Amino acid sequence: MKIALIGASGFIGSAIRQEALARGHQVTALVSNPARLQRADHLEIVATDALDSDRLAVQLRGHDVVISAFSGHAQGDVYGYYLKGIGSIVAAARNAAVARLLVVGGAGSLEIAPGVQLLDTPAFPAQWKATAEGARAALHLLRDVSDLDWTMLSPPPMIHPGTRSGHYRTGTDAVIAGASGPADISVEDYAVAMLDEAETPRHRHQRFTVAN
Image (cartoon, rainbow, N blue to C red; front, side):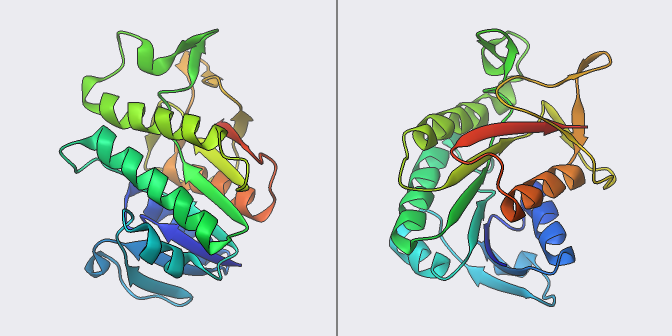
């Protein structure tokens, strides 16, 4: 499968890139700084600007799946930059006529209790609020898109480097519970879930979440 991966050098994007290559897929890594990646078999590294929708559409054309790990963490206006980026990516995917668009979502829009999203609780970390608000707005945007085969995968509140077990649980719009609070997941197992969804779609036109 030919996969275009936007944000392939980031924390989650790197794990998705490594999992996709390990499965033998052809990966086009679309990154703002190609020098951050090393060449590898089945990997094409391409400089891109996610906000340049016309150029991005050309780069996405011919791929079976587009996975967006786009992030605005390093920007001054995280929320505004993220919204511009996801809007540009959706438009580019539409113009490139790609078969599927998978998006790395946020945990903030998951419900911690019926009708109460994690982002709206007092304990939500202030430093991640703009990013979480951007991801929530992106989910609202995607839910209004009917002409793209999209899926958003939200991580649990805690995602961290770890080991690849290959096992995970799935949920929809609520935080998955662990033994003493919300369950977590390794970034490696999150990548497994993303590639499983790319290879065998089970959550078309919806958001889902995963945890150990």
